[in-house]
Image 1 (cartoon, rainbow, N blue to C red):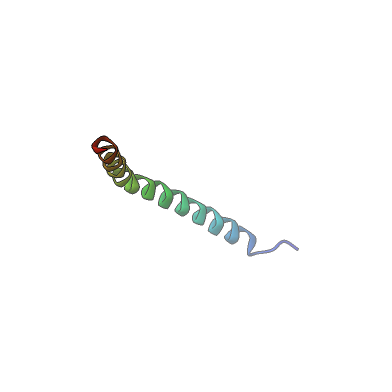
Image 2: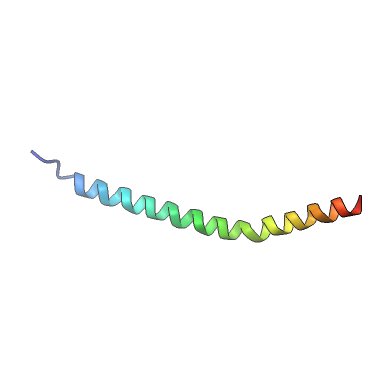
Amino acid sequence: MPNPQRPFQLWLAFLLAYFCICACSLSARADLPTAEALRGRIQAILAAE
């Protein structure tokens, strides 16, 4: 007898994976300006020495 919960679990897993991908891409985009600012700060410190 097939498990009636199976389609729901697959849908939930797909939704969770989609949410994680969106969250990762959004956080990567949000971290980009801070990473650029940090790189600029490091280059300024190296240039000062």
